[in-house]
Structure formats: C-alpha cells, structure tokens
Length: 175
Image (tube, rainbow, N blue to C red; front, side):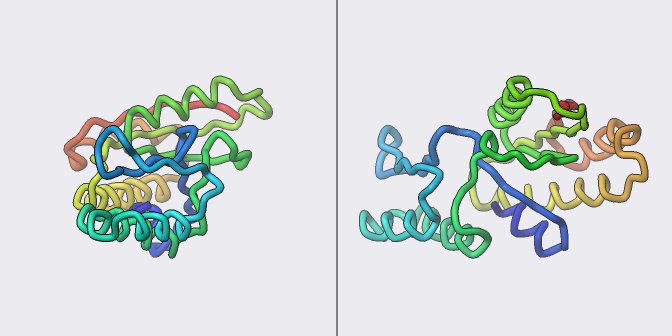
C-alpha cells in the first residue's frame, strides 16, 4: 500500500490487492496472526487491534500501516475477485506473483488482451516498503514513457534491474 499511496500522489491510476484467502496481520505471537476477511474495513481492523493491545501494535507499526491504508481506501480487495483488466500488474513478493499467474491460468480467456506481470521482491517492513515505493514509481515512469510497451518491456526491465539491485521477474498473461 505504500507504493499505492506513492503512485497515486504522482497521478497514476492505481489499484492494490491481496491474493490470499484472508487478510493476515502479525499477532502477539508468530503462530497466532490476526485474521480478517476481505470484507473487513481497515478501520475495523485498526479498532480491533487497538482493543487487543495498542502498545504492541503501535510498536510493531501495524497501527500506523492500517491508519495509512484506511486513508487510501476503505478495505482490502482480493485480486481473484476483480474483473477489471490491467495492462501492467506489479507484485512485491514472488509468492504473490505466482498466485496472480495461477489466477490468470484459471480464468476463461476473453479477448487475449495481454497483461504484463512484474515482480520486484520487497521485504514486508516500513523501510523496505518506502524504498520499494520509489523503485516501483521509477519503473512505472519508465513503462509509461514507452510508445510500444509490448516491444519495449524486456529492454526496460533489463535497464531497470541493476538500479533496483534485486531480481525482476516478468511474464505475459492474457485475459
């Protein structure tokens, strides 16, 4: 959501999604995450964690993250439930990249419109999320400036990868 916020402020049309069956946030222990369904608003999650342990969830940054998220949109959305078509989908974790591709493989093909799926691994913490937002913004600018994305994308990603200092995954799926 940090990248979502950053890109929106720069004028990009952005949507953000989860790909799991539920929303999972760290709990008091590793084996007891806080689990919410996708219909739960960020505000409801925030109030629930404030009720449970405001000190813990302030200290670990979860309340800050939820506060930011609720200013961006009311609740999380699940990618697999979205019927909108996208030209470019950027994921921040290889597991999510794989789930997006898997979802495309199960969808019935309609018009064979291509979608470029790109992964940039970003660790799930505040500092990496901020760095990742800048990286994704730089990549979005490079992609947006292309006159022929389908032909230029391999070269764009090849130029971008050394700057990102992390491997970039890319594939094309079709709607």
